[in-house]
Image 1: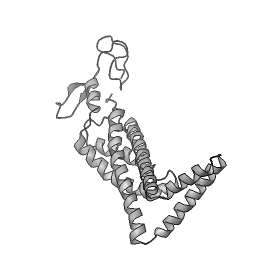
Image 2: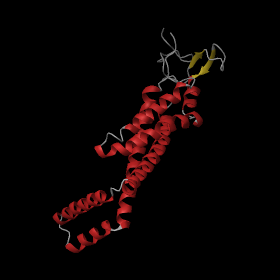
Image 3: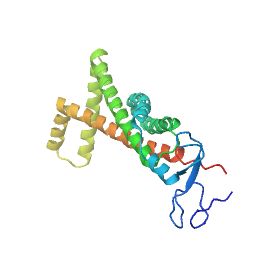
Length: 224
């Protein structure tokens, strides 16, 4: 059955919120008991409601997925993008769980991105905490400090060689080497890496939440 605007009688697509000709908000009918069976509901108002987020169920979904995803990211980051790619999957899944109990099951891309943002923040915290605990446990509980020191020394040697090939003078290279080998330099480098990982996870999660809303939150077509 062809859908037409009640004002100008031009053809309107089933998923349109407004008439493309005169701009009149379109109507759909819902059997939801909260709105009254068979009562008309403005589709434009429903879409605006889809832009708001009920944060209690959204947070429950985000926490349930962000924490384990962040912990796994902390362990898998060493093998490339496999670890960070878990975060957009977790954010999209959080959007799907949030929409499962939402009536009508609509959500805008902006709302999905906000759920992804919260998922990314929680996942970044979980990844940073897991990384710190792992480093502490490996050095002090498993007594693998020498292995870390040797690995760090090799990295500093490689950086010094790269700086030398780029034409830096010996004094600058020596100062950089002393800074990076100091406790402050090592701590700063670890904090920088942890912060960079958290920012990457945050960006990936926002993208995952937006994509999840884009592909899972399209309005349902009315029955024809």
